[in-house]
Length: 511
Length: 111
Figure 1 (cartoon, chains in turn orange, purple):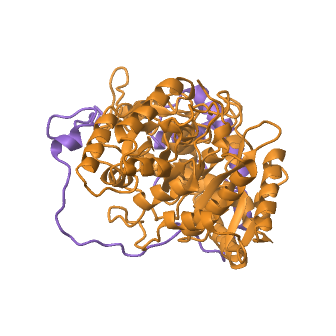
Figure 2 (cartoon, each protein chain N blue to C red):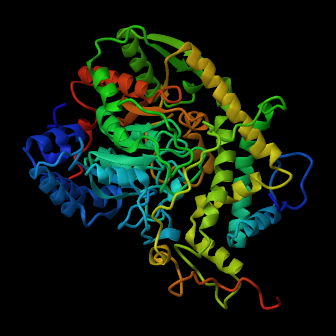
Figure 3 (cartoon, each protein chain N blue to C red):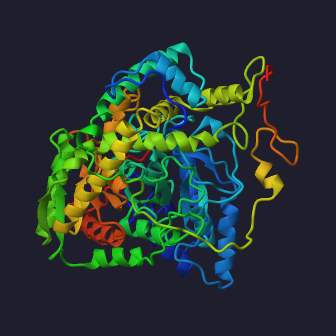
């Protein structure tokens, strides 16, 4: 794919290439990792004042890049993405770099170990650029709940970049990093991808280790890749995925190469024999008109390429958001109990002293933002005696019904599709005082988390009414992540052929 | 689960009261101002009214799912491996004495 030649970056500038392209240039000796890393640091210096995708930059990035260059020069056998820079969501623990999860309560905290996914990136000789902004403890759909200020959407700096992983998506969409890591509990990789015109994948639950990912809701959280192309997401997934004995929910499966699936998808001539299910409940009349329009145009393209489009119904999806906002706060209220002012993070001593309970209350009052407090109290309520069965117990039953709906849908279709988000990026401040409106923005992405299945968001064009990116979501049965990459790469090629350029090459220059 | 909210009502999901929110905040160890309690009572009431509908389809014959892809009996061999040093474990602590976390008094004066 050619580097963009418009204002998004200087034509041919190293920050405009994909990770796969950079890997090829590094391998051939055309460029060094120091040059590639410096190009991205320069881009960050030039535009991140406006975008605010990063909370922390790695002051060892160039040092690492130089050491990778030296290894390559010495003839060492290196991984495919060796020397390529990557941005890391601040929810992931990183040795030597603060890991705050966007919260004041962890301000300046430097973890004593790497998350497994981070350790795997280091072992594969990728260069960590820094940590990206997010809603506090990944609670939010806009990054406005970050304790360190919102991230701005590179397409329109007055709009949200999605959330919670808006920093990773914005960094990739603003050409500050070719690839990034995110985490997805209810759509935190896929919704930011949709509204920034990037690619984001939530793998099958258990497909990627959660060890060292600061937990939000442990039965829903999953770490995954953020990128500008399907192949790049697959290349990252191949590195970070696979069994981790440190995560007891990690699957022991042997996974196929997702990069091979993406390459095969990009080459396949047509989609004959593929059944694509359109989930009726996720193609709703309440969605933004331009999102629905691009979605139906994309379905026509898929059908034109030979796929069989079938309508499927998942009636219990209407209860998914409700179940999610019981299960998530319940698990979060438990997970966040560890922030007790004893082992790490903030401690606030109340005026005049007090018992350890007073100190905990003062610390959590000062250290947690409004959305975190809201969800912890909601979760405490959902788990309390007298309400447990009606709320948490019922939500778990809904989860079963949603899994059954998916099973029935996948009996009729090989993959399912929907818009990845019901709207394009809304304005900063628009929903921050209306929690329910913010929650409903996740209606399209939540079902996949509840069922543990994989999902991808892929750009499907700009909405006519506001010129902002829209995304299509592709979902596959659990363990069939390769289907996302194969179909995603085919669709990406069909769309780029139709447009004559990549979507992100049309993004504003920012400089 | 061990501590119950005050005055459970017969109908589930009705509006919360400020007293309930105050009690929940105490259970969750989050200090809140009176203004915050009032604001949260309203917000949580709206949220609860919208998520209450899970009970419509959660009938007795449907088993619950706690985990999307259940794994059973995940064991590992009991062999020594690398662990954090004391200094590493204490490095992020708000207060310590070099070998232990230092914690505020757990018991009140009257105890």
